[in-house]
Structures are given as C-alpha cells and as structure tokens.
Image 1 (cartoon, rainbow, N blue to C red):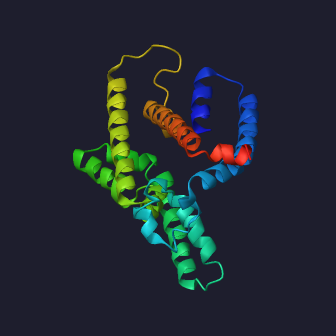
Image 2: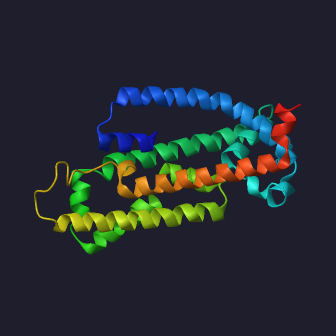
Image 3: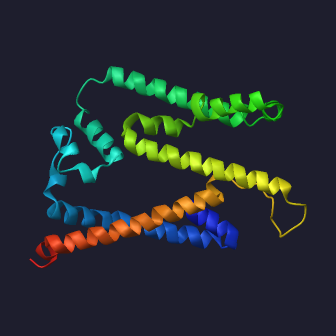
Length: 231
C-alpha cells in the first residue's frame, strides 16, 4: 500500500478507486491465505511442528522457514494461561520508551531550533548522526532488533545505511541545481516516497515473485496439490 501511495502520488491517480481495489485485495488475500496454509502444511510437514517445543528445528529442518513475527505470536499463544506479570511490565516499559523516542524524533529533532543547531558546525552534525542512528533510533528498529536474528537485522542495517547515503547524495546534488525545472522539482517528499524507498519496494516485490515461483515449483514436485484437490 505504501508503494501504491507513492506511485499513485506521482501518477496523479484517483486515490478512492485505488483504495477500493486495495480493500478487495486484502479480503481476497485473507481467504487465499487459509487455502495456501493448508497446501503448505500438507506439502511440508515440518511446518506443523511447534518450534517453541522443538527449538532444534530452527537450525535444522525448519531453518528455511523462519518467520520472526509468527514465532513471536506462537510464543504469546503458548503462554496465555501463565502468569506473565514481569513480561507485561517489560512490555509497558518498551511502549513508554518507544513513545518517548518517537516524540523526541518528531517534535524535538525536527524543530527549527534543533535543525539550525545541527547545521551550525561539523561536530554538531556528528552529534546529530549519533542521536539519529544510535541513541534515538526508530522505535520500530529497536523492537525489530529485539526479536529478529542478528544476521537478518544486519542486512536491514546495511540497506538502511546505503539508502541514507544515497538520499544524502541526492540532497547534495539538488542543492547544486539552479532554480527552475519541471513542476514539483525540489519538493520535499516523505521518506517512504523517496527514490531509494521505491527501489527497495521493487526489490522486495521481485524477490517475492521469485519465491512464489520457487514455492509453486516445490508444491508441484511434492504432489501436495494433487493430494488436496485431486483426492
């Protein structure tokens, strides 16, 4: 939906029609996900195993089926009947910390006085980088790093560094372009509508299509589809 928003903004599409089709896609996807879940469970029995009870599967037969969010949800469901007072306290602290970080980034670090201070000298820019990338990084990044494996988080971090570097280079280049040009040139876009964000979205879509092909090929080879739909 984020990619549609940025693409639609550039093309000037009718956002109401765009949103209606997205709703249709969400409803259709919810139905198809149940069907696809059954197919994959039949084709790959390891997916029926509870990785919380059998953690050895995470580095073995289920190594290629990692899903941090699913693992997290299953863990919550397994402990609903247990006393998790300490867990709730830690979650509350996490919410407060995330809220404080977001308020600092949104209201303090984007304020006129802070922006003027940041551009005043090179040491100030260095301090701003430490605050932005380390001390007051995104709450989402902090939570992501808390339950996703280091190897996966490292790839995300490298991508973020490359994206920020490219965005900085483009910003410096725009400053050297004389006034004028095409309509809308020089307009500041939200971060999720930047060129690097669109390229990243395209890479994600391309990888998804490739994995879809691999999944379909694996399902056909396993004979699961014939078992379910062919009797």
